[in-house]
Length: 326
Image (cartoon, rainbow, N blue to C red; front, side, top):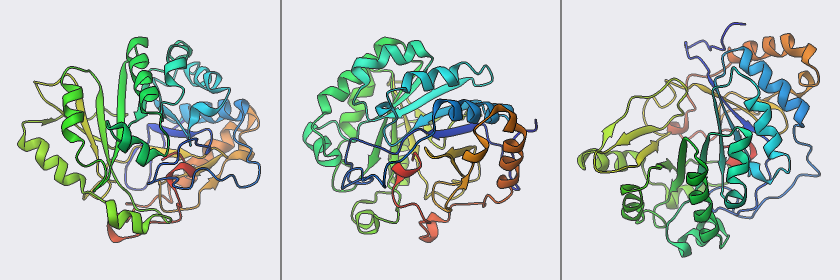
């Protein structure tokens, strides 16, 4: 099968696969009022996930990130990992988690086949962590990070959304942490969604300002791998850890887009922001539907736009990032 490619020559090696939109944190930039179910949602089951992974693997997907909501809230999370790991065409298996269950299950997930893990830690100040997340779980999450390092994950990353007036003073603490700790810090520029215009205006901090400071302080931009996400990664000879910046408002951010998203209910999203998604679930019921599913994927890629238009103030239809896996 030919590799997924859009009309702008971009090839797609990376799938962000949401398995639930449920989350048990109440982060101010994402779910400030907590998770509010719309009826009784029925998320993709293991058979549907297996058929989805199989189809994407046949059209060039090399990396799958299991996302949410909070993906580890699914009781069959380890089974989902094993489904992805059993496909020998997938070379990288990752997840993003709030770390709530990490201390207890890091080794189990590693043994199931998970190799890379991103943990959301928006502040190293426990009080600010609580203010941003709505949960007094800082110590639990940090124990989870330690457990992930001990389990042997090939890459442990820390995600922090940059928030002016909240955690923007934390950079020295983060730098002190990675001086002797081999983790990647990922600073994510706040993005405006349908529910967050006022919040965005109050707390947006340009990632380009952080980039300029890093370069001034001697950090060097690393070369990107084919299955990397959108972060620009920086290294410094005096630090064991790295810093990555995700800057969606930077010019040409979308030029090297290599990732697609499928929601927990089986909708394909060509972009995080701009459209309602295309249902794939009717073609996830049987292996015999794979050819038709792949044809639908190829057809939909022709509708992918050149950019997300965030820099023009267009936020699309996405109300909050938890709904399709961030």
